[in-house]
Length: 415
Image (cartoon, rainbow, N blue to C red; front, side, top):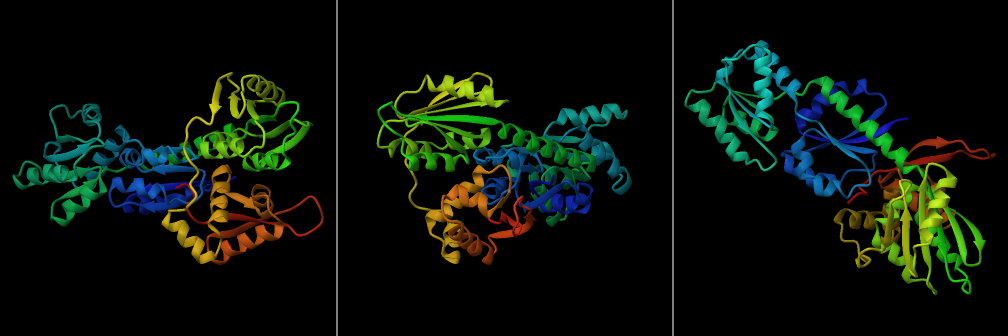
């Protein structure tokens, strides 16, 4: 199984990673380049559907943290440890032989540099060290290295930040980048892949739900279809006033995190309804947890009981209103080019967010949209004709007939 990872890094980092990406055949990487780490915040909102996000360092991750929290997928960043210092100093001994005390270094953890120097027996050699953190000032770091070289105290700058490297080079100063070992980058990507697979396995846990009204009121089948489509669930009619739902933890979590969706389930019902969900490692466990959660619900509320017996609710838990217009410039552009209605495009985006795989068939989208196959195929044709979706394979069916095309969206859907 291929894991798709969005990689955010400097131009130099991405160029280097491309040189050995073939050593990671089970990972497909989409590259996003920033000029300065703070650019990462805006880049996160334009990444295309993937399984996880990998940042080339702690700085871009920090700046993008607020955006990362909104993603329905996990993220990971490459940490600067002692192996980075060791590799960089070893490289310098061959390419730029320089006395330790003539180096200026900006670094996240100066203690790690001193520890490496002690390990290699350089007890009396101390470079000029500048501790940097996520609130660093670019001009301040450039000035640190510049002043030391201009007054002759330092002969070579080592920087952790691509933008600083570029500025010092443009100013004619001697500078090298901190080197992330190839083995550390590969391990970071493998860890990101493991995180993505773990996230998928957690999201695939069984979720059982119940929709209930008072005994004198029957539940609208349209209402049941609406809720089932939103969490990609199968339904069973237990009684006129009770339906059970069979879905996954990931689909239910995404829905419960969307207050406007929960409000639409509850507010448009002709009679008060109760909704409950339970998670579990088995159907029996999830069913019992859903029944227990149902006992806590009151009219027009929803509750969830997790497999660790944590009761969450009532949902919805805020008064956010439904956004009736699309203000994202990119989605407005897509709607105009494809002539898709904002409503249909918005539904496709929500479908992408709900799925824990970047791949889907026309049937998957049809079930979610609750429209005809013809309508679904028209939507997909408009998207593929304009490059916003692509066919990446075929799925054989158990019945006679043509294989189903497998699609993948090709535009940001996490913003």
